[in-house]
Length: 171
Ligand SMILES: Cc1cc2nc3c(=O)[nH]c(=O)nc-3n(C[C@H](O)[C@H](O)[C@H](O)COP(=O)(O)O)c2cc1C
Image (cartoon, rainbow, N blue to C red; front, top):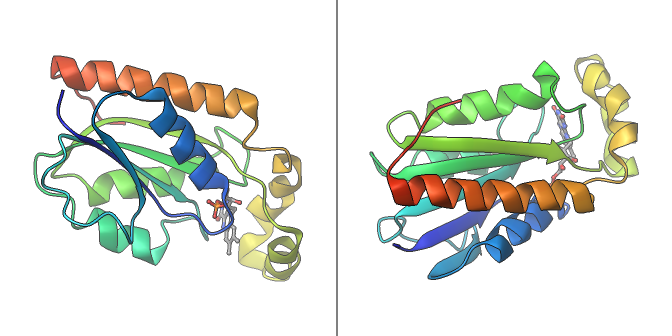
């Protein structure tokens, strides 16, 4: 199996925890790095790329990173979000990210909730455009929890198996 990169962007540590779980579930030649540290993506056969949902979308440094993913590269995306799992608020950034890597081979996506710092919540609740997800965010306080991390590990192994068999699918 070729080299695997788990690259993440994380402001408060939630996405980093998920990235570490994914990295820990894999075996063989693999690297865990922030997007800033990742360097040249060409040597990797499989990329896992993770980010926090921010203002309904993909943080700007993540958008820039995703645009550098080489054409035809096999990739899996993961995200953490304060909003309730399954809500459009939790999905839209991942959908946008998948468009940004449309020239790559998207093999799967994973997301789970991530706690929102009280400081961020207080600020965000002031702006009407954040009200919808900020209202949901309080119940994310315990995430990512052990169950989320176990799911992330299963996701990693499933992606790795599909990639080794040459399968891929979109969202
Ligand atoms: C400035 C800011 C904007 C956010 N915007 C959203 C959002 O639009 N939708 C959402 O579900 N969560 C939102 N969140 C919550 C984060 O996605 C969530 O806490 C995530 O787990 C943070 O990941 P990190 O610890 O890796 O930075 C926002 C958080 C911050 C601080």
